[in-house]
Image: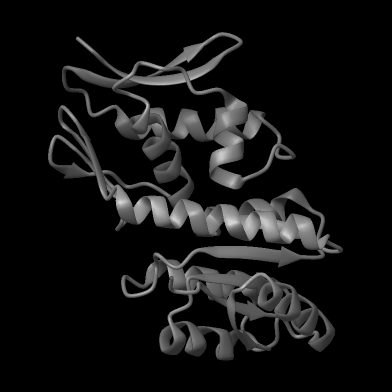
Length: 232
């Protein structure tokens, strides 16, 4: 079985060594970088399965590294786990909006970091197995992270895309997806304010409204969550 390769990026040697030893003990192959420039070059050269990325880096910040990765078709599918000592929600929101898959706050426990990494890698493998979803005139490309409605590509942020993909996966069964499930599946966290989900859902609704019938609608179910359906 091929070992997953993880790139660890931090400018603190002690943190790099700690995470490296942790991952080696769990059977991962590990490569490292100590600044943003080196991180980008290593992503292109080593093609890691996951990047553990500190935000406060020399040369290029972690936010800038994340932005460049997610804007490059060649490497945009690389999952990113942000590692940060910053506590402000706006910093975390910025990273997630740029396309990061999850975050862990310093100081972190070995168990938490390992669990987050394993979850992201499992999700990435699942995405490779199921590469696309279709339901009527909705098409979702899970591998390349884009969606079309009636043949027109939707302009979605990565967070909006992930919400749409999760709702589309459950569309056939008609199941309602709870806010907590959306938080756990998209950000692997229940710490995030569930009201943020409502904001993203509102944005996504507007982008799905193309004025044509049948309309692709996100239905709110009071006290339960959301479901995606066609309204005729």
